[in-house]
Length: 93
Length: 366
Image 1 (cartoon, each protein chain N blue to C red):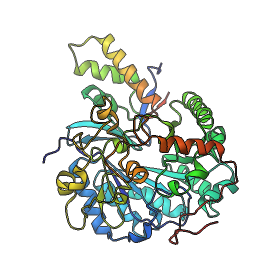
Image 2: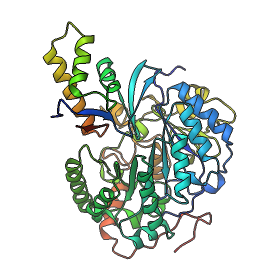
Image 3: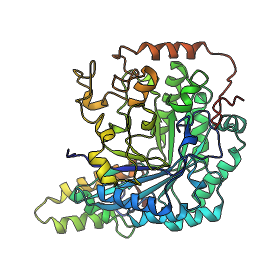
Image 4: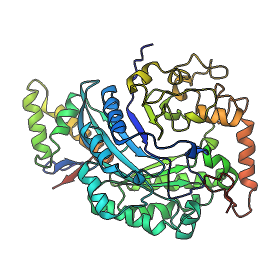
């Protein structure tokens, strides 16, 4: 599991941009792209190396006050793990 | 006609010229008939038009794109059009300063090909002394802080060295490794007998690749692509004709794949005469094999028709003379015996390879 105090940042090969056809964000890497939903976009935009995983969870909790914290935490961790497995983020302590 | 699909990627084949002579080159065998007709401004306009259509990525490819003197301007243009740009190169001729300039112009990733892990073998396949220079180019990519893809085209002569290839990719700190088996079209079809591996080789190589993929998860992405000749079900070539990709040839033809202009009977529109949007939406050649209406049996009643789209149109044409039939790579194709016979030949060919090298004089043997 990704440590809560680590600070994920997008890998050099990953670029986040708005897809003007779908009006959603996509995470681009060599010869592929990952279409992101709103939560995925919000998390990816916080992967700058400046925020801890914990802070990212906090940020999402405050923008979704009606959602349960445990659910948000699980979703953030699962999404970051997917990005890590695909080499789209780097994690530094 | 309106199309609900949008293209995702543009393959810009900037030139068919290349310092190498690879025996499996995917450029058409009459490549010298296609001159570099597009100026810097033409390409920049095409990039802009592509982006408006929905394209997110551009592959700057060839031939050898480094032979374009305006490559830095093209990369800058792609970047200004917000396209994710991949440079697909042999690494020759490259120097460190030019690579830094490409980085500063906004290139997003660089793919360098090597032909083998053994210098003599790599040079023999490339038809030119190039291996050491390629490794140097790959190291510069990493030194410049750019993401590196190492590409190795696989065939019977190097397929037993997948472990060594993975080792080399790790040493070079590649972010991505493409282990792409030769597909038997263009020059590779000319040299098929010398290149087609056996099933045993493939099974072993694939299992090595899968182990490495698991071990290096998150560190290096590994792609292993089977040759159509052993897949039994055809692949969704280009994710389907005119669904995801636009390839533009050095002379400006806009096509659904990089060999579409070798299919007799199709006429492609040129980006020097029409806009990319016009071509994508209205050109007869893009419409020719879109959707399912063009299909005959066994595709017409097959439940995989929206998965593989009938396979590769170029392969159908080059093996049977008819681009409208099921890809013979499909085990359901009435012409599948062509593939089976070729596979039998692979097991029997033990003679040292006599390659026909890519050259303007088609029969230059070495």
